[in-house]
Image (cartoon, rainbow, N blue to C red; front, side):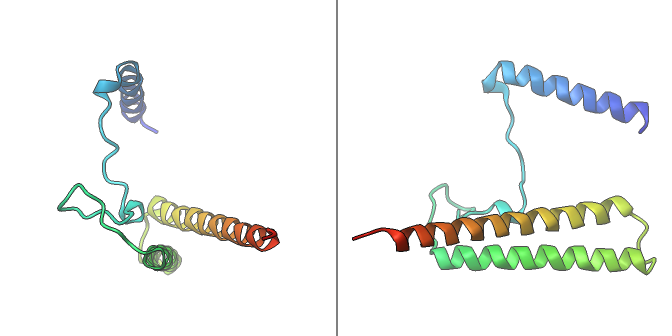
Length: 121
């Protein structure tokens, strides 16, 4: 890693540390991507109601798209169509993390359902 890149990272870290000292100066996170959207309309500040099934379907579609992107980039790297290994690694890691999160959420939902079934009325 070049020294300029290390210096840039160090300066950014120092700026963030200074911002933490004064919370009014903390800047927004910026765009988190499509996976961070939770049913907010971009034209208004109020949340519009979104059904659970729509949220679940959207999350599964995002997961499927992320998996497909990682697969396509892996194949492109294997066939020599791309040489940017870092982009492929990031796509594969993102797909892996999203799959782990989806599996964890599924397990929590199944546990909650099982707990409800055990509840005596």
